[in-house]
Length: 150
Image 1 (tube, rainbow, N blue to C red):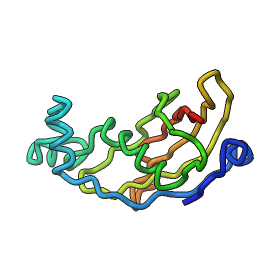
Image 2 (image 1 turned 90 degrees about the vertical axis):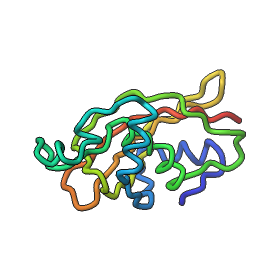
Image 3 (image 1 turned 180 degrees about the vertical axis):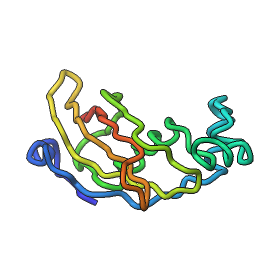
């Protein structure tokens, strides 16, 4: 994990790929819990029998469950010492590039893309590329914004 000592250290790393998180399995239980929580019970996520005969050959992880791993992956890749807190400020762009078969292992690669001073602190832009172990294309690419509060 990369630990920055304040926002000036962060500024020096803009444009840098910081590395990768640990691998995380997204289990059928995770998918089913997410489906229950969100009400997204689409058969491609929860009906194993029907999904086996469907376009993906198995159940797949919800796109929003995939992108919900962004905070975990970012927290495993870097931290900023000497600040009060980091707050999820949103996403500028999220693309779901490849379906994620249930049971896959995912990890996130993090690149810092921008840092801007605002009246509330600093807005940090980061691109998180969520990879599927053994796949040629990523599952998701998310351009996120984090508010750094002093």
